[in-house]
Image 1 (cartoon, rainbow, N blue to C red):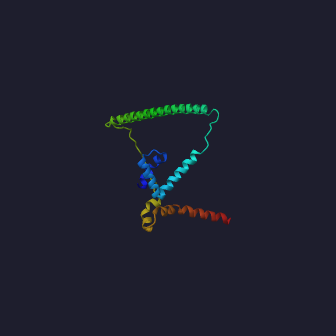
Image 2: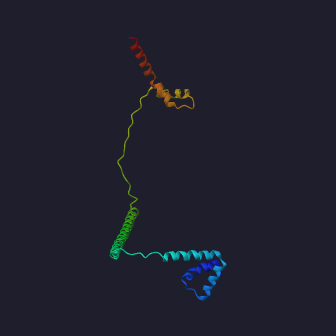
Image 3: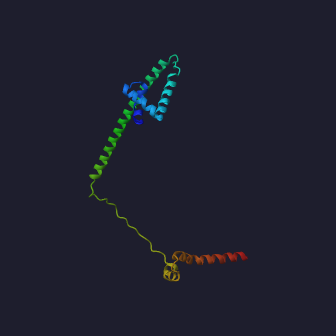
Length: 178
């Protein structure tokens, strides 16, 4: 007998339900194998401790309380089953409604009259002529004088506002001298 077979039959050996020949083989293996003998001793000691524990005495009214709790748990199980059934029905109805909505949307998109065009009244836009100023007429000169990497708009805006700024500075100087 090997250790694996001993482990498989050990429960029947402890309960003393093995046939005579198997019982002898198990005892012989325990004599030959220290590991299996130690395991058998541990199991038998644990059983001895368990069997020698004092008996548990039930408190007064324990049976009545236990039955009441069991009935309560059964009522909760019935309520839980009803809730699950209602949730399942709700999920099924929501799925059916979603499929119906998608079918409706699909049918309306499929049957849409594509030949019908949207006709809107014509729009007439008018634009006034831009005022000609010195910058707009001399743009090629500014473009020619600006370096290649600079944007032209800052130069044009500065040139357009330069006479106003110089006039304001002269006016401020005149007011300060008085």
